Length: 629
Image (cartoon, rainbow, N blue to C red):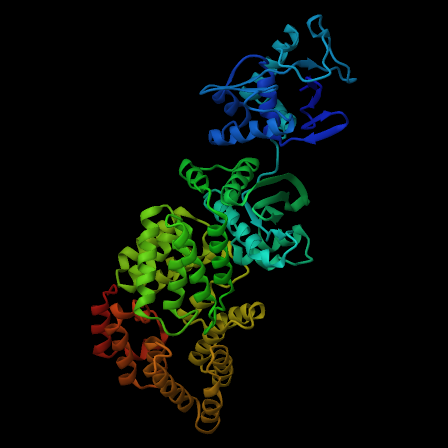
């Protein structure tokens, strides 16, 4: 399309630029498309439906996208919606261009008519018309572009021929606030953007735990994209000053290291979550990904929240992610306190309830502390119930509800909740991971591995398959994956303990003892390492394991830990079936008092319990727990 002037502004659709007094502003192709569409009928109302069909053909987008595009045009033209000099809103109908329109020759000079000879030094509210021939041509061209897209002209003019993007990664947004203490805020904004984009089922979005690996990397964007197997990368920054926040983001087509789109947003901190929703919508719009109506509704759901509530929530998320996946770390308790603080100030803020439930779920599972209490279970249950009451569309809520169902041995309900969690957020690695292991545990290993492979696909920098190999007896493969994982997380006590288990079942006892000692030290039980090591060197592996189990039985009597499933595994490993069944029955008895399943979900799938399966007590326990026969 030829260039034209709107008042004193030069509009060049082929370049996606508008210029005034030597200053040039580049518009997004879709925003330029909206401008051209309303310019084609200058002075006349253009319906929203007409604009949406022209600018977003064959793609479902909400009217919010059009509203944002018009807002961007008003920002560029320094227009005021209340007293429009350029674009007027026609309530419930559409928009009308009210500024002067003048076609421009290829040499840059204006095409004049008698009516257009008036002073154009300032933008005017007078309705300037194109010459009749130019107007007819412009309308005809626009109609052809919409209806036929002959020879891909539409793509070349409006920039709609952008490379296809079906997968992307959001790199950690840089903290430009000048205050290192604000890192939690930048991290939180990164995660919120990932969460919003992850809800789009047609788009693969890499999980936060994999993209955060590249926070301070020197790798190029194409290299990062190859490692993550994505088409595009989003990078940017967060700058906060008091209650004002500015977020800048750009979309890079990775194979060509080509900047496709860049945008800056400035908002009050109260609107930070709304800002991230706006950013996610803009990215989805730019890459022309199909967004289902229900997904669009969830992405656009965030509301304004006070700065203090948002700060407490994001601090909680920050500490939750800092939780050492080993043992004895107080970070999870700290996270729970921040979530509770947010709830105390805003009792309707759903994300804080989700965070609180998840924090106490970690405590109950023993990944943060080894002494859960009935109080932890009640907090988890109440927080999850309140979150579900306020927002049944949260993927994380249903993931926590599934864990509650597992705690109460409601296996079919747990599976339903996990599948619903994935339906609401198909890119949530944690939900795929949970469903995968659940399916393996109840006797569907092939389906379970498929889910774990999906988790691996969206979270490639963390291992999701080593345990699957462990439960299927493929110990060497499990060991190799776990060793690779430990290179990235050498202080992860839980992973060291998992490697101990695999070495032990593989009969590699020296290696098993080495990993056990590391795990015990990371868990805060360094005082038992020396005596257990001495028992191993003088009396062998079984003697060392018996001494360790005896120590932990004492710790359990003192209330320091509650690990009946672990003790059952150790006693089964050394051939003491009676003690193994004692602790399995203890887990059964404490189901409702502590809320944890005590490892009973894995009765059938745990290779440690294979020596117990021929005992009649085992079949009876499986029946009472309600696992599929």
